[in-house]
Length: 212
Image (tube, rainbow, N blue to C red):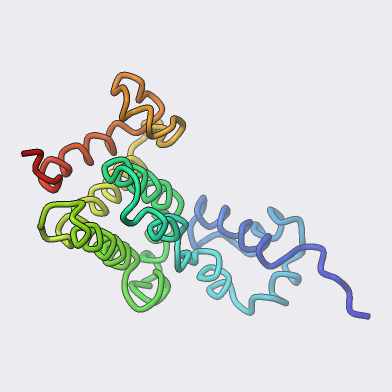
């Protein structure tokens, strides 16, 4: 009977990701093995080279959770609240994956490992564009260019995360308070990223239906 592995591939990848993000590609397999609590040989039985392990560990989820939520939000609820919620989820996603994207770029991997046939940010813009287009078709937004709006939202959130991670300042909490609390009282929004709230406020003025 074959021996059951004491550690899963996913656990090895998680250990490798932590070490690579701390030390870059120069981290040794020995350091990764020590972090995972296994031998170097155990890693090489599953990943033939350090490069293979690196790209597997730095992989970007093909379909992040925020995308799965879009179908249930389309045409339902308060659209401004939905956009705040979507932007917060996108921010959480980029907090997780942006260091990996930067690390992959440092190894000259420009497209293939960033989520398929096109770069990850452009895929996110495309998905959000489709969501906004459906909302326009349902007369929940005024006629506008949904791709431009999606570029503004995704690009602004991604740039915010990038600048935040490049800064030595502590990160701002993003989603510790119910979104509805903000909509009822701006003063109560201490647990939500003020940046996201301000961003959606500004964009909303240009895309909301006229109140006449």
